[in-house]
Length: 106
Image 1 (cartoon, helix red, strand yellow):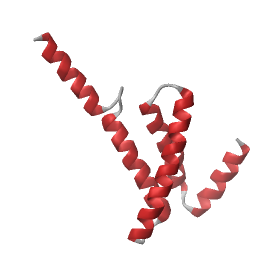
Image 2 (cartoon, rainbow, N blue to C red):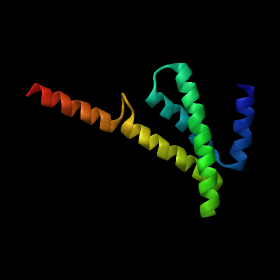
Image 3 (cartoon, rainbow, N blue to C red):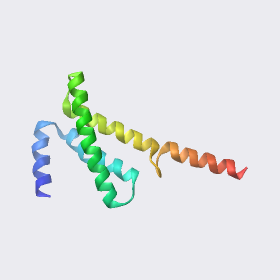
Image 4 (tube, rainbow, N blue to C red):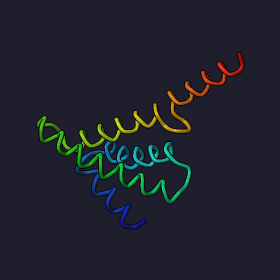
């Protein structure tokens, strides 16, 4: 916890509070939407963090844009995909389940 606190305080000065909060919250909430087991959730969250960091960096270099902003934007896009297509909580999957159930009732 001490290392996380030091990292957060140092990051506030370099990238800003919104981006720090985004990189702390978005991978964890995305992983929570994808699984309910804690060990898988931690691994998925780490993977999303690494993926959004790498993809965001390369997109920022190609667009000559803010690196931190692109990283959080990629993490937000991954969250958006999980929000739509999550196996248990996704909007599209919930719609498809409801549609299938209403078709079975007829």
